[in-house]
Image (tube, rainbow, N blue to C red):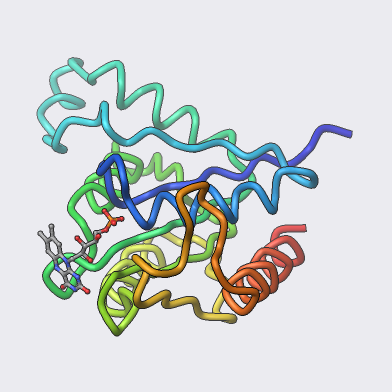
Length: 182
Ligand SMILES: Cc1cc2nc3c(=O)[nH]c(=O)nc-3n(C[C@H](O)[C@H](O)[C@H](O)COP(=O)(O)O)c2cc1C
């Protein structure tokens, strides 16, 4: 049987992104059981409804919408930007939600992980993200919530967690999400 496809969305384009480090680690934990895809948000220009209305939909939007449609599950890893989510993720959600009536997010099982070098683990970024995810009718895993604070100290150069506590916590999250999707 074909493996279910899990798409990983990271709310940062930064080369040394902490969110990306966590996403890659969790993606690695899921790889045996699922086909894991890192979704590249960099090619998505800012949403403008005129492109769709005027038959000039950017090729990157079309490819992105098709890629999301094929996914069986989604994982979002987000920093907090100015007490909200990064525009990168909101823009991706907006693009996938249109044209009207063609919401590619509809009904897909999803979970959100907050990551920050600060103390509150991206909690307000996660909360902001949850609102459009609920509206777009994604099926959101509620627990365990993950807010990884002090992110700069959690992973080594090779992208491995430096403590067994972090590794065990993320493994527990990956198992819960596997069961949720499975
Ligand atoms: C525009 C901007 C706004 C930020 N706002 C917050 C914030 O509200 N809360 C917070 O904990 N960190 C904030 N930060 C710091 C980020 O958490 C930090 O840059 C983090 O490394 C970004 O995630 P990344 O490592 O995945 O790129 C902000 C950073 C930027 C660039």
